[in-house]
Image (cartoon, rainbow, N blue to C red; front, side, top):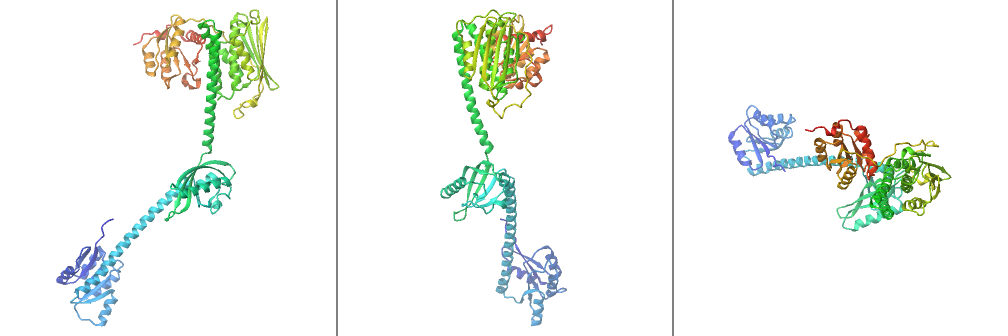
Length: 626
């Protein structure tokens, strides 16, 4: 608080000794005395200062006290200044009346009674002090009112614009405040709900209203007056919402509850997302475990029937590759369905089935996830057997794959012709058991006919659009009776890369070792295996090599800069990645891509094709480097 301003008195007398005597008599702390020797000088002082009292001598030359008082009363600035006349001249009633008429509050004769004068002036001193206090209090109240108005406006703006619905109700649930946020969230206007019970407007049902009432009662008797509860309430249109109620109990001075303020957050979508996430995590856990169990079974069964480690590695890798391709296909479709045509195409891309000697026909069919995984393994086994013992084991045989939909069933046929004469197997290996039992578990019927001119497999499988997630089903398309046959070049697993130098950019040591081993077996040499962006950039800038294998991601970092550096040097390369093409550098999405886990023969075929079509003479990788 600032110090009190001094109180100003004006002393007017043409005799200096009288002014000095008055000054000595009245002086005290907090009082400031101004002296004037004439009426004109007094008027000048009154223009500059505010006075709480003026003591005027009546008898003065040029302008006496009465004249000065009349001038003061005619001026707005000085009209309210109290005046006490001092005079040494005997006076009559008429003269005294003139003094009061001029605005005097008192009229004292000289010689002045000092105690009386001091008593009278003290009254005006205190009155001035009270006016200062009242003025200060008035200013403080005005400032407080301004601050309160600003705070109220801020609070109103917050309540009106907040994404929360702020509702206030009495302990009996009679609504007394309903913000615009509540109106936006629930649909009722304040006029429609204020003064009414929360359970009578359709906002809360009987069970929810009872739960809120009990909770408010618990807050009242408990020591903690704030809490959060989740309640189900309805909008004006009847939609049910899950909401978090953040309660605050408002008390009066005696500590009794007056009302409850609830800040309400709509968590309906969050709850749904949490439930979906929970289901997805459970589904992911289920699928991962099933996949691991499938891999375990494939490993053990393949090992049991393999005469040598090399054959085990070949069979196991092929089956694992078929399973991985099916997983990738399902992942691209968010595990809702997989195209049967694409399952067949994946086997052709892997080299399991020779594209140039295979005819494929059938309508567009989407398969549920489990059936797609099992059918991928089946197609892989049939293609592998055809390549080793059947129609694709010579240079003349052919494989025909066709399917159709009939009475809610998928009828799939695998037919071979032109191969060596067929004799029924004396025993069933793991591949045959896998073909038969994996589809029997899906409710299918499997028949094998080992005709001398070529083996035939018939699969009768359950299929219905209702088996797919209705939310994720694709739009209906016009039926296609027959798809065009798929043709391609047969992949030769006996490919050499004799004399070529390769750079292998891979962050997983075991995979880098496997790639180096594959290249060495094919007669190539690996000049480096960088595993980070910096190492790869340095290797591309300093080493001489003919082609490169580039991981699609190095320890979480994109490989755009490495691909750009290889392209600038004109060095052919392919991507090896566990990601799909959508996660690779956009500028290089036309580059060859091989997915992990990879098949050795498929890798070598892609590399041979790469260097045969893109490697100029002389090789840019062998150019002298500075």
